[in-house]
Length: 478
Image 1 (tube, one colour):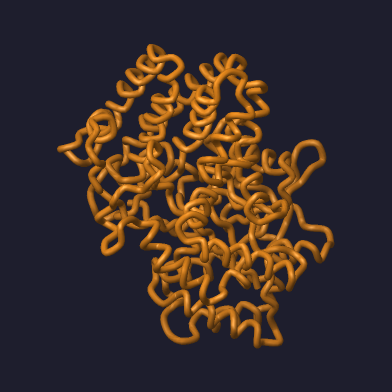
Image 2 (image 1 turned 135 degrees about the vertical axis):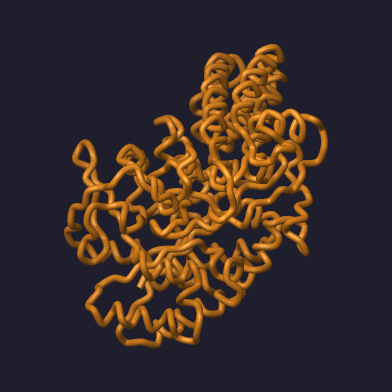
Protein backbone atom coordinates (compact mmCIF):
# COMPACT_ATOMS: atom_id res chain seq x y z
CA UNK A 1 0.00 0.00 0.00
CA UNK A 2 1.11 3.52 -0.86
CA UNK A 3 -1.15 6.37 0.26
CA UNK A 4 0.13 9.65 -1.19
CA UNK A 5 -0.97 13.08 -0.02
CA UNK A 6 -0.27 16.12 -2.21
CA UNK A 7 -0.04 19.05 0.23
CA UNK A 8 -0.27 22.46 -1.35
CA UNK A 9 -1.96 25.83 -0.99
CA UNK A 10 -1.69 28.85 -3.26
CA UNK A 11 0.89 31.37 -2.02
CA UNK A 12 -1.03 34.18 -0.33
CA UNK A 13 1.63 36.59 0.93
CA UNK A 14 1.61 40.17 -0.29
CA UNK A 15 4.87 40.26 -2.30
CA UNK A 16 5.67 43.77 -1.02
CA UNK A 17 5.30 42.98 2.69
CA UNK A 18 5.64 39.19 2.91
CA UNK A 19 2.49 39.07 5.05
CA UNK A 20 -0.89 37.55 4.21
CA UNK A 21 -3.68 40.17 4.20
CA UNK A 22 -6.93 39.56 6.02
CA UNK A 23 -9.19 37.16 4.08
CA UNK A 24 -12.73 37.38 5.48
CA UNK A 25 -13.86 34.32 3.52
CA UNK A 26 -11.58 32.21 5.74
CA UNK A 27 -13.52 33.23 8.88
CA UNK A 28 -13.34 32.57 11.74
CA UNK A 29 -9.64 32.50 10.88
CA UNK A 30 -7.66 35.42 9.50
CA UNK A 31 -6.65 33.75 6.24
CA UNK A 32 -6.90 30.42 4.46
CA UNK A 33 -3.40 29.24 5.43
CA UNK A 34 -4.23 29.56 9.11
CA UNK A 35 -7.60 27.89 8.66
CA UNK A 36 -6.31 24.90 6.69
CA UNK A 37 -3.35 24.47 9.03
CA UNK A 38 -5.79 24.25 11.93
CA UNK A 39 -8.19 21.89 10.14
CA UNK A 40 -5.67 19.64 8.41
CA UNK A 41 -1.92 20.06 8.81
CA UNK A 42 -1.79 20.35 12.60
CA UNK A 43 -4.16 17.41 13.28
CA UNK A 44 -2.27 15.17 10.86
CA UNK A 45 1.00 16.12 12.53
CA UNK A 46 -0.40 15.40 16.00
CA UNK A 47 -1.72 12.03 14.83
CA UNK A 48 1.66 11.04 13.38
CA UNK A 49 0.17 10.59 9.89
CA UNK A 50 3.31 11.79 8.10
CA UNK A 51 5.17 8.78 9.49
CA UNK A 52 3.07 6.56 7.21
CA UNK A 53 1.95 8.74 4.33
CA UNK A 54 3.87 9.17 1.13
CA UNK A 55 3.68 12.91 0.57
CA UNK A 56 4.89 16.05 -1.14
CA UNK A 57 4.54 19.57 0.19
CA UNK A 58 4.71 22.75 -1.86
CA UNK A 59 7.83 24.80 -1.06
CA UNK A 60 5.85 28.02 -0.62
CA UNK A 61 3.47 26.31 1.83
CA UNK A 62 6.38 24.69 3.68
CA UNK A 63 8.04 28.10 3.99
CA UNK A 64 4.90 29.52 5.61
CA UNK A 65 4.59 26.55 7.97
CA UNK A 66 8.23 26.84 9.02
CA UNK A 67 7.64 30.46 9.97
CA UNK A 68 4.11 30.35 11.40
CA UNK A 69 3.62 26.74 12.57
CA UNK A 70 7.13 25.42 13.20
CA UNK A 71 5.88 22.46 15.26
CA UNK A 72 3.88 21.25 12.23
CA UNK A 73 6.82 21.79 9.90
CA UNK A 74 9.06 19.81 12.24
CA UNK A 75 6.54 16.95 12.38
CA UNK A 76 6.50 16.80 8.58
CA UNK A 77 10.30 16.57 8.45
CA UNK A 78 10.20 13.92 11.19
CA UNK A 79 7.65 11.96 9.13
CA UNK A 80 10.10 11.74 6.25
CA UNK A 81 12.81 10.46 8.59
CA UNK A 82 10.39 7.93 10.08
CA UNK A 83 10.01 6.51 6.57
CA UNK A 84 13.79 6.29 6.23
CA UNK A 85 14.08 4.46 9.52
CA UNK A 86 11.30 2.01 8.67
CA UNK A 87 11.81 1.45 4.94
CA UNK A 88 15.24 2.82 4.11
CA UNK A 89 13.60 5.53 2.01
CA UNK A 90 11.99 8.78 3.12
CA UNK A 91 8.26 9.39 2.76
CA UNK A 92 8.61 12.82 1.11
CA UNK A 93 9.09 13.63 -2.56
CA UNK A 94 9.76 17.03 -4.10
CA UNK A 95 7.61 19.44 -6.09
CA UNK A 96 8.54 22.18 -8.61
CA UNK A 97 8.99 25.40 -6.67
CA UNK A 98 6.03 27.51 -7.78
CA UNK A 99 3.43 24.86 -8.72
CA UNK A 100 3.37 25.81 -12.39
CA UNK A 101 1.87 23.70 -15.19
CA UNK A 102 5.04 22.25 -16.68
CA UNK A 103 3.63 21.33 -20.14
CA UNK A 104 2.79 25.03 -20.62
CA UNK A 105 6.23 26.21 -19.49
CA UNK A 106 9.29 26.99 -21.59
CA UNK A 107 12.27 24.67 -21.45
CA UNK A 108 14.10 27.19 -19.25
CA UNK A 109 11.13 27.49 -16.90
CA UNK A 110 10.85 23.73 -16.55
CA UNK A 111 14.52 23.46 -15.63
CA UNK A 112 14.37 26.40 -13.22
CA UNK A 113 11.23 25.27 -11.37
CA UNK A 114 12.41 21.67 -11.07
CA UNK A 115 15.86 22.76 -9.90
CA UNK A 116 14.36 25.19 -7.37
CA UNK A 117 12.06 22.52 -5.99
CA UNK A 118 14.91 20.02 -5.63
CA UNK A 119 17.13 22.60 -3.93
CA UNK A 120 14.39 23.52 -1.48
CA UNK A 121 13.71 19.85 -0.77
CA UNK A 122 17.34 19.09 0.05
CA UNK A 123 17.57 22.17 2.26
CA UNK A 124 14.37 21.22 4.08
CA UNK A 125 14.67 17.44 4.39
CA UNK A 126 18.43 17.10 4.51
CA UNK A 127 18.67 14.69 1.60
CA UNK A 128 18.23 14.64 -2.20
CA UNK A 129 14.71 13.86 -3.45
CA UNK A 130 14.08 10.46 -5.03
CA UNK A 131 10.93 11.55 -6.88
CA UNK A 132 8.92 14.63 -7.76
CA UNK A 133 5.20 15.35 -7.83
CA UNK A 134 4.09 17.24 -10.94
CA UNK A 135 1.65 20.07 -10.16
CA UNK A 136 -1.86 18.88 -11.10
CA UNK A 137 0.02 15.78 -12.36
CA UNK A 138 0.24 17.81 -15.59
CA UNK A 139 2.64 15.94 -17.84
CA UNK A 140 4.11 15.70 -21.30
CA UNK A 141 7.26 14.06 -22.58
CA UNK A 142 9.29 17.28 -22.39
CA UNK A 143 8.43 17.59 -18.69
CA UNK A 144 9.58 14.03 -18.01
CA UNK A 145 12.77 14.73 -19.96
CA UNK A 146 13.38 17.73 -17.70
CA UNK A 147 12.76 15.63 -14.57
CA UNK A 148 15.16 12.93 -15.72
CA UNK A 149 17.81 15.50 -16.68
CA UNK A 150 17.63 16.84 -13.10
CA UNK A 151 18.15 13.35 -11.68
CA UNK A 152 14.55 12.68 -10.61
CA UNK A 153 13.85 8.96 -10.47
CA UNK A 154 10.05 8.81 -10.55
CA UNK A 155 6.75 10.64 -10.51
CA UNK A 156 3.12 9.71 -9.80
CA UNK A 157 0.42 9.78 -12.49
CA UNK A 158 -3.29 9.11 -12.91
CA UNK A 159 -4.52 6.01 -14.77
CA UNK A 160 -5.67 7.98 -17.83
CA UNK A 161 -2.20 9.50 -18.30
CA UNK A 162 -0.67 6.29 -19.69
CA UNK A 163 -1.88 4.16 -22.57
CA UNK A 164 -2.07 1.02 -20.44
CA UNK A 165 -1.76 0.56 -16.71
CA UNK A 166 1.24 -1.69 -16.06
CA UNK A 167 0.90 -4.86 -14.03
CA UNK A 168 1.95 -3.97 -10.53
CA UNK A 169 1.12 -0.29 -10.98
CA UNK A 170 4.64 0.91 -11.76
CA UNK A 171 6.22 1.20 -15.19
CA UNK A 172 8.78 3.25 -17.02
CA UNK A 173 8.61 5.86 -19.76
CA UNK A 174 11.58 5.66 -22.12
CA UNK A 175 13.20 8.99 -22.95
CA UNK A 176 15.89 10.37 -25.23
CA UNK A 177 19.46 9.22 -24.95
CA UNK A 178 18.63 5.86 -23.42
CA UNK A 179 17.23 7.41 -20.24
CA UNK A 180 13.94 6.48 -18.62
CA UNK A 181 11.85 7.56 -15.66
CA UNK A 182 9.62 5.41 -13.44
CA UNK A 183 5.94 6.27 -13.11
CA UNK A 184 3.66 5.03 -10.33
CA UNK A 185 0.03 4.88 -11.44
CA UNK A 186 -2.44 5.45 -8.64
CA UNK A 187 -5.77 3.64 -8.38
CA UNK A 188 -8.22 6.14 -9.84
CA UNK A 189 -11.42 4.62 -8.46
CA UNK A 190 -10.14 4.25 -4.92
CA UNK A 191 -8.47 7.67 -4.92
CA UNK A 192 -11.59 9.34 -6.25
CA UNK A 193 -13.71 7.62 -3.63
CA UNK A 194 -11.52 8.98 -0.84
CA UNK A 195 -11.04 12.46 -2.32
CA UNK A 196 -14.75 13.03 -2.82
CA UNK A 197 -15.79 11.41 0.44
CA UNK A 198 -17.65 8.32 -0.79
CA UNK A 199 -15.22 6.01 1.01
CA UNK A 200 -15.01 8.20 4.09
CA UNK A 201 -18.61 7.43 5.03
CA UNK A 202 -19.13 4.57 7.44
CA UNK A 203 -16.64 2.97 9.74
CA UNK A 204 -14.91 0.61 7.32
CA UNK A 205 -15.82 1.64 3.76
CA UNK A 206 -12.33 2.71 2.72
CA UNK A 207 -10.56 -0.24 4.35
CA UNK A 208 -13.10 -2.71 2.92
CA UNK A 209 -12.45 -1.43 -0.60
CA UNK A 210 -8.71 -1.90 -0.10
CA UNK A 211 -9.37 -5.47 1.05
CA UNK A 212 -11.38 -6.13 -2.12
CA UNK A 213 -8.57 -4.80 -4.31
CA UNK A 214 -6.04 -6.93 -2.47
CA UNK A 215 -8.22 -10.01 -2.78
CA UNK A 216 -8.29 -9.44 -6.55
CA UNK A 217 -4.53 -9.96 -6.58
CA UNK A 218 -3.21 -6.40 -6.88
CA UNK A 219 0.48 -6.47 -5.86
CA UNK A 220 0.51 -2.72 -5.28
CA UNK A 221 -2.38 -0.47 -4.36
CA UNK A 222 -1.44 3.21 -4.65
CA UNK A 223 -3.76 6.06 -3.78
CA UNK A 224 -3.15 9.77 -4.38
CA UNK A 225 -5.24 12.76 -3.41
CA UNK A 226 -4.93 16.28 -2.05
CA UNK A 227 -3.54 16.10 1.47
CA UNK A 228 -6.16 18.67 2.44
CA UNK A 229 -8.75 15.91 1.94
CA UNK A 230 -7.97 14.86 5.49
CA UNK A 231 -9.68 17.32 7.80
CA UNK A 232 -10.18 20.33 5.54
CA UNK A 233 -12.22 19.08 2.60
CA UNK A 234 -13.80 16.40 4.79
CA UNK A 235 -14.16 16.91 8.51
CA UNK A 236 -12.95 13.90 10.48
CA UNK A 237 -11.11 12.36 7.54
CA UNK A 238 -7.79 12.85 9.34
CA UNK A 239 -8.93 10.36 11.98
CA UNK A 240 -10.28 8.01 9.30
CA UNK A 241 -6.89 8.04 7.58
CA UNK A 242 -5.13 7.05 10.78
CA UNK A 243 -7.64 4.26 11.45
CA UNK A 244 -7.13 2.88 7.94
CA UNK A 245 -3.36 2.94 8.37
CA UNK A 246 -3.69 1.17 11.71
CA UNK A 247 -5.84 -1.50 10.06
CA UNK A 248 -3.27 -1.97 7.30
CA UNK A 249 -0.44 -2.25 9.79
CA UNK A 250 -2.34 -4.90 11.74
CA UNK A 251 -3.11 -6.94 8.62
CA UNK A 252 -0.71 -9.74 7.60
CA UNK A 253 -1.67 -9.08 3.96
CA UNK A 254 -0.47 -5.48 3.64
CA UNK A 255 2.70 -3.41 3.96
CA UNK A 256 2.46 0.37 4.12
CA UNK A 257 5.32 1.70 1.99
CA UNK A 258 6.27 4.64 -0.19
CA UNK A 259 7.09 4.69 -3.89
CA UNK A 260 10.86 4.84 -3.40
CA UNK A 261 10.81 1.77 -1.16
CA UNK A 262 8.68 -0.15 -3.67
CA UNK A 263 11.09 0.73 -6.46
CA UNK A 264 14.07 -0.33 -4.36
CA UNK A 265 12.94 -3.93 -4.68
CA UNK A 266 14.50 -3.85 -8.16
CA UNK A 267 13.44 -5.75 -11.25
CA UNK A 268 12.72 -4.62 -14.79
CA UNK A 269 9.84 -2.18 -15.07
CA UNK A 270 7.42 -2.64 -17.98
CA UNK A 271 7.43 0.09 -20.58
CA UNK A 272 4.39 2.36 -20.77
CA UNK A 273 3.54 5.08 -23.27
CA UNK A 274 2.50 8.50 -22.10
CA UNK A 275 -0.82 10.14 -23.00
CA UNK A 276 0.09 13.79 -23.40
CA UNK A 277 -0.51 16.46 -22.38
CA UNK A 278 -2.76 15.39 -19.53
CA UNK A 279 -3.48 16.29 -15.90
CA UNK A 280 -5.58 14.93 -13.05
CA UNK A 281 -8.01 17.85 -12.83
CA UNK A 282 -8.88 18.69 -16.43
CA UNK A 283 -10.50 16.18 -18.76
CA UNK A 284 -9.28 18.29 -21.71
CA UNK A 285 -5.56 17.85 -21.04
CA UNK A 286 -4.11 21.09 -19.70
CA UNK A 287 -6.71 23.46 -21.16
CA UNK A 288 -7.97 24.50 -17.73
CA UNK A 289 -4.89 26.70 -17.46
CA UNK A 290 -5.14 28.43 -20.82
CA UNK A 291 -8.69 28.29 -22.27
CA UNK A 292 -12.42 28.19 -21.61
CA UNK A 293 -12.53 24.38 -21.72
CA UNK A 294 -15.59 24.00 -19.49
CA UNK A 295 -13.82 22.80 -16.35
CA UNK A 296 -14.76 24.88 -13.34
CA UNK A 297 -15.49 24.65 -9.64
CA UNK A 298 -19.20 25.43 -9.72
CA UNK A 299 -20.64 23.89 -12.92
CA UNK A 300 -24.24 24.79 -12.05
CA UNK A 301 -23.40 28.50 -12.05
CA UNK A 302 -23.51 30.17 -15.46
CA UNK A 303 -20.05 31.61 -16.09
CA UNK A 304 -17.36 31.78 -18.72
CA UNK A 305 -13.63 31.32 -18.39
CA UNK A 306 -12.59 33.08 -21.58
CA UNK A 307 -10.36 35.26 -19.39
CA UNK A 308 -7.87 32.42 -18.99
CA UNK A 309 -6.27 32.83 -22.43
CA UNK A 310 -5.58 36.59 -22.28
CA UNK A 311 -4.38 36.33 -18.68
CA UNK A 312 -1.81 33.76 -19.74
CA UNK A 313 -0.90 35.72 -22.88
CA UNK A 314 -0.38 38.91 -20.86
CA UNK A 315 1.90 37.19 -18.36
CA UNK A 316 3.83 35.24 -20.99
CA UNK A 317 4.56 38.47 -22.87
CA UNK A 318 5.68 40.12 -19.64
CA UNK A 319 7.83 37.08 -18.78
CA UNK A 320 9.62 37.22 -22.12
CA UNK A 321 10.25 40.95 -21.75
CA UNK A 322 11.51 40.57 -18.19
CA UNK A 323 13.85 37.82 -19.37
CA UNK A 324 15.30 40.19 -21.98
CA UNK A 325 15.84 42.82 -19.31
CA UNK A 326 17.39 40.26 -16.98
CA UNK A 327 19.85 39.09 -19.62
CA UNK A 328 20.84 42.67 -20.36
CA UNK A 329 21.06 43.93 -16.78
CA UNK A 330 22.47 40.82 -15.14
CA UNK A 331 26.14 41.10 -16.20
CA UNK A 332 26.36 44.63 -14.84
CA UNK A 333 24.85 43.86 -11.43
CA UNK A 334 25.75 40.22 -10.68
CA UNK A 335 29.15 38.54 -10.65
CA UNK A 336 27.74 35.49 -12.47
CA UNK A 337 24.05 35.98 -13.44
CA UNK A 338 23.44 32.40 -14.52
CA UNK A 339 25.06 30.97 -11.41
CA UNK A 340 23.11 33.36 -9.17
CA UNK A 341 19.82 32.27 -10.69
CA UNK A 342 20.73 28.57 -10.60
CA UNK A 343 21.25 28.73 -6.86
CA UNK A 344 18.13 30.71 -6.03
CA UNK A 345 16.19 27.67 -4.81
CA UNK A 346 18.66 27.22 -1.96
CA UNK A 347 17.44 30.42 -0.26
CA UNK A 348 13.89 31.11 -1.46
CA UNK A 349 12.40 28.80 1.15
CA UNK A 350 14.17 30.48 4.04
CA UNK A 351 13.82 33.83 5.82
CA UNK A 352 14.11 37.00 3.74
CA UNK A 353 17.46 37.67 5.40
CA UNK A 354 18.93 34.70 3.55
CA UNK A 355 17.93 36.11 0.17
CA UNK A 356 19.46 39.46 1.14
CA UNK A 357 22.73 37.81 2.15
CA UNK A 358 22.68 35.69 -1.02
CA UNK A 359 22.25 38.84 -3.12
CA UNK A 360 25.10 40.54 -1.28
CA UNK A 361 27.53 37.75 -2.13
CA UNK A 362 26.28 37.61 -5.74
CA UNK A 363 26.40 41.37 -6.34
CA UNK A 364 28.85 42.95 -8.76
CA UNK A 365 27.80 46.49 -7.75
CA UNK A 366 25.29 47.05 -4.92
CA UNK A 367 23.27 44.41 -3.12
CA UNK A 368 20.13 46.49 -3.77
CA UNK A 369 20.37 46.00 -7.53
CA UNK A 370 21.20 42.31 -7.06
CA UNK A 371 18.16 41.85 -4.81
CA UNK A 372 15.97 43.53 -7.42
CA UNK A 373 17.13 41.13 -10.13
CA UNK A 374 16.75 38.05 -7.94
CA UNK A 375 13.27 39.10 -6.87
CA UNK A 376 12.34 39.59 -10.53
CA UNK A 377 13.49 36.01 -11.19
CA UNK A 378 11.42 34.76 -8.24
CA UNK A 379 8.32 36.76 -9.22
CA UNK A 380 8.50 35.59 -12.83
CA UNK A 381 8.07 32.00 -11.69
CA UNK A 382 5.36 32.90 -9.17
CA UNK A 383 3.33 34.65 -11.89
CA UNK A 384 2.45 31.24 -13.33
CA UNK A 385 1.26 29.55 -10.13
CA UNK A 386 -1.45 27.22 -11.45
CA UNK A 387 -4.13 28.45 -9.04
CA UNK A 388 -4.41 31.69 -11.00
CA UNK A 389 -6.30 29.83 -13.74
CA UNK A 390 -7.94 26.99 -11.80
CA UNK A 391 -11.04 28.75 -10.49
CA UNK A 392 -14.07 30.28 -12.14
CA UNK A 393 -13.34 33.99 -12.41
CA UNK A 394 -10.42 36.34 -12.78
CA UNK A 395 -11.66 38.26 -9.71
CA UNK A 396 -10.72 35.36 -7.39
CA UNK A 397 -7.97 35.70 -4.83
CA UNK A 398 -5.76 33.35 -6.84
CA UNK A 399 -5.79 35.27 -10.15
CA UNK A 400 -5.25 38.47 -8.22
CA UNK A 401 -2.23 36.93 -6.56
CA UNK A 402 -0.42 36.11 -9.82
CA UNK A 403 -1.08 39.67 -10.98
CA UNK A 404 0.45 40.98 -7.76
CA UNK A 405 3.63 39.08 -8.55
CA UNK A 406 3.63 40.71 -11.98
CA UNK A 407 3.20 44.16 -10.43
CA UNK A 408 5.96 43.50 -7.90
CA UNK A 409 8.35 42.35 -10.63
CA UNK A 410 7.63 45.56 -12.52
CA UNK A 411 8.27 47.60 -9.39
CA UNK A 412 11.64 45.91 -8.95
CA UNK A 413 12.51 46.56 -12.60
CA UNK A 414 11.51 50.20 -12.08
CA UNK A 415 14.37 50.61 -9.59
CA UNK A 416 16.74 49.82 -12.45
CA UNK A 417 14.92 50.97 -15.59
CA UNK A 418 11.83 53.01 -14.72
CA UNK A 419 10.85 53.96 -18.26
CA UNK A 420 11.07 50.37 -19.47
CA UNK A 421 9.03 49.15 -16.49
CA UNK A 422 6.31 51.68 -17.31
CA UNK A 423 6.29 50.57 -20.95
CA UNK A 424 5.92 46.91 -20.00
CA UNK A 425 3.13 47.71 -17.57
CA UNK A 426 1.16 49.55 -20.24
CA UNK A 427 1.43 46.52 -22.52
CA UNK A 428 0.38 44.22 -19.67
CA UNK A 429 -2.73 46.28 -18.90
CA UNK A 430 -3.71 46.44 -22.56
CA UNK A 431 -3.81 42.65 -22.86
CA UNK A 432 -5.50 42.25 -19.46
CA UNK A 433 -8.35 44.32 -20.87
CA UNK A 434 -9.25 41.28 -22.97
CA UNK A 435 -9.66 39.10 -19.86
CA UNK A 436 -13.37 39.65 -19.26
CA UNK A 437 -14.73 38.99 -15.78
CA UNK A 438 -18.09 37.44 -14.92
CA UNK A 439 -18.48 40.33 -12.48
CA UNK A 440 -19.89 43.35 -14.29
CA UNK A 441 -18.64 45.67 -11.56
CA UNK A 442 -15.05 44.59 -12.18
CA UNK A 443 -15.47 44.19 -15.94
CA UNK A 444 -12.01 42.85 -16.80
CA UNK A 445 -8.59 42.01 -15.40
CA UNK A 446 -7.19 45.39 -16.47
CA UNK A 447 -9.64 47.11 -14.16
CA UNK A 448 -8.78 44.66 -11.38
CA UNK A 449 -5.08 45.35 -11.89
CA UNK A 450 -5.23 49.13 -12.11
CA UNK A 451 -7.82 49.41 -9.33
CA UNK A 452 -7.36 46.84 -6.60
CA UNK A 453 -3.68 46.09 -7.22
CA UNK A 454 -2.30 49.44 -8.35
CA UNK A 455 -4.88 51.69 -6.70
CA UNK A 456 -3.45 51.25 -3.23
CA UNK A 457 -6.64 49.80 -1.75
CA UNK A 458 -6.71 46.51 0.16
CA UNK A 459 -7.71 43.69 -2.21
CA UNK A 460 -11.36 42.81 -2.02
CA UNK A 461 -11.83 39.21 -0.85
CA UNK A 462 -13.72 37.46 -3.63
CA UNK A 463 -12.46 34.06 -2.57
CA UNK A 464 -12.98 30.97 -4.66
CA UNK A 465 -13.81 27.72 -2.84
CA UNK A 466 -10.77 25.98 -1.27
CA UNK A 467 -8.49 24.33 -3.81
CA UNK A 468 -9.45 20.73 -4.46
CA UNK A 469 -7.80 19.01 -7.40
CA UNK A 470 -9.74 15.78 -7.87
CA UNK A 471 -7.58 12.76 -8.65
CA UNK A 472 -8.89 11.44 -11.94
CA UNK A 473 -10.71 12.46 -15.08
CA UNK A 474 -13.99 12.68 -13.22
CA UNK A 475 -13.85 16.46 -13.07
CA UNK A 476 -17.01 18.45 -13.46
CA UNK A 477 -16.99 20.20 -16.84
CA UNK A 478 -20.20 21.86 -17.93
